[in-house]
Every structure is written in C-alpha cells, then in structure tokens.
Figure 1: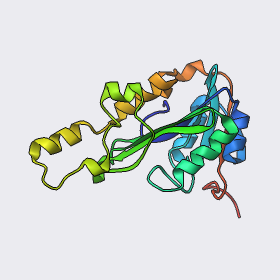
Figure 2: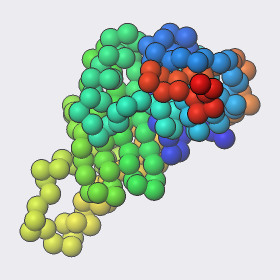
Figure 3: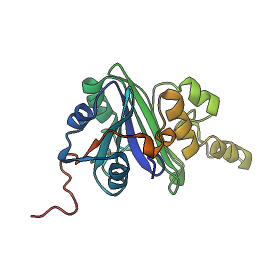
Figure 4: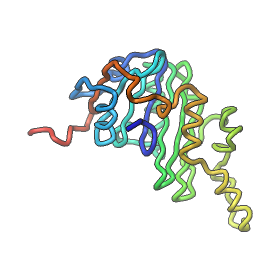
Length: 208
C-alpha cells in the first residue's frame, strides 16, 4: 500500500522524522517500517518517515491534522505554526468520494499558498496566495467562490466543474513542488519511521 490516495500528508524538506514528530506533538510513539507504518496511519494516528534524501513524509488519513482540516479557520494557523518550527513544508489531502482536495505550501516559514475545493458541495472554503506555475499549467486552483453567479447557464457550470481539481491533479502538484508519495516504491524504504498520535488523540486500543 502506497501513501497518496484518500489521505493527507505533509512533505517536509531537510527535517528528520523525530523533528517532524516533535513539531506535531506525537505521543504513544512506536518505531515502524514504511509498509507497516503506512498501513497503520490509514487506520489511525500519524506515521513519519524519511523515504528519500531531503524529504520527510508525515501521513495520516484520520489524524493529520488533528482537530481541524482545510475547511476550518484554524487550518492556516496550524500550517504557520509548523512552518515556524520546520521551515519549508507542503500539505496535501485528497478524497475522490467527496472530491475533497487541498494543497498548501510554507516557504521559509511563511504560508505562501493554500487552496481547498470540496466538489461534493461546489465549495472553495480556502484560497490563500496566488496560484503557482504548476496550478496554472494544470488549470486548477484558479477559481474563487465569488466567481459563481446565479444567472449562469449550463455551459458556465460545465466550465466551473471542468476547472475543479481531481486527485490526479493533487499528485501532479505534489510531484512538481517536490515529492509525490506515489512515486516511492514500498520496498525501497529501509529506514524505520515513527508512528504516533497527536495531542488529544488516544490509540483506539488504549487500555484505561
């Protein structure tokens, strides 16, 4: 199982797994290999590993981020707080069922770009910064909610939907910005990573 579809991940440049895990405040940590950690993070918690030189990946389908998501007001501040500690990082999430897709990047600690589209609701709850070159080339991330009009005809709505991003666009943006997890062969990662839980989240099998 590779990281990418129907999940969320951070790609952090020039920071080790422990440093990223510390920035995320992960608790209940366990060392895991790439495949086991990936599978675990699709169920619960967050897995952090450095599969290639210069990039660390933090992945969690349910708990990254914890307590907020790209549709909520606190999401940009969460990214900024991570950027203040980690410097350069990128965030991605994609779910083809609800057509929930988002991407963001922090450069030198500054949130320079963030975009979220929820196709199921025809909603664009987040748009910060200007589209990057790759977004313009793909024709995604360009729309604003205020562009929608009540008097649109069918052709106008068709153009709106055609400009909506899909999961393939999210992967292309990740690839062009730096690293796409889908391009990492499972068997190529030999160094273990860290699986843990962010503050306020307890393992589902925790004993009380």
